[in-house]
Length: 351
Image (cartoon, rainbow, N blue to C red):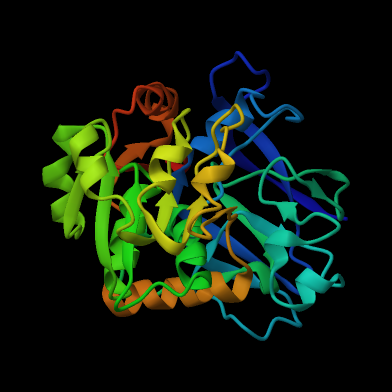
C-alpha cells in the first residue's frame, strides 16, 4: 500500500520527552477520508500511554484522540462527506463491525477489540496507529464525525473524548428533568459532565474536596455544591441523588458517595483510579443501589453528542497551546494546573 510522510510529535521511550517525528500515513483508499488536523485535545490517557503506565505501549508513540480538522481528500466510494467538511475523529478509527456490539452501534465494546486512534493496530499498513499530534490523518469514513460549524473548533476537540465519556452514561441512565445528578470531581471530565447534565434538564450537584472549586462549579452550571470532606454536608445530603457521575481518577472512598444515592440510585464511574476501590456490600444492598462503569460511546452516539452540543452551544473550557509546548502541558496536567483541557493548535506544527 502506498504511504506518505507527515510531521508529528511523539515519544520513542517511556521516560523520553515528546519531540518531532516523521510518521507514515496510508494513501486514501476507496472508503477513506484524509483530514488536515486543525486542533487536537490533550487527554490524560495520552500521558498514560506515552509513559507506558497502562503497559503495552508500542514505540514510537504518537498520542492524540480528540481530533478536529477539515477533509482534504476523499475516496471514490465515500458518500457521507465531501472535501472541505469540518469533521472530528475520537478514540476509535475502526472495529470488527461484525460482532453483536458493533451491529448495535456500540463499537466501543467491540468483542474483537476496536482499533484505537493511537497505539492500536492498523491492518492496512500492519503497524501501530498514530494519533492526532500530527499534520494529517487518514480514516475510514464510517469512523469520522461531523462537527457543528457554530461551535468554536478548538474548544470542540475535547468533546471527542471528554464529551462522549460523560454524555454516554448520562444518556444511558436517562438523566433529564426531574433527575438530581451528582458530579464528583471538576476536571477535564467533570466540567463536561456538569455542562451536559444541566443542558439535559437535570438538577446538578457538584461534589468536590476543594472549597476553591465552588465558584467555578456554579459558573459551569451547577445548582449546588457538596464539600465531600465536610462530614456535616455529606450527612445532610444522604439519600438525595438519583445518579452520580464519578469523574475522579485518584483513589477515593466510593462508599461515601454511594451514601448520597436515593433508593434505586446509580453511581457510574468514568474516572480510572490505578488501584481497586473497595465497595462495601451494605453500601448497595439496603436501598437497591447500583455501581457501574462506562467507556466512551459508539459512533452514532458520539454524533448525537456533537449535535446536542451544537444545539446547546456546549464546548470545553480550554487553554490553547503550541505543539512545541506539549511537554510543559504534560507537566502542568500532572499538577492539576489546567482549566480544564489543553488543546493543541496544529498550525504550530505545520509552520
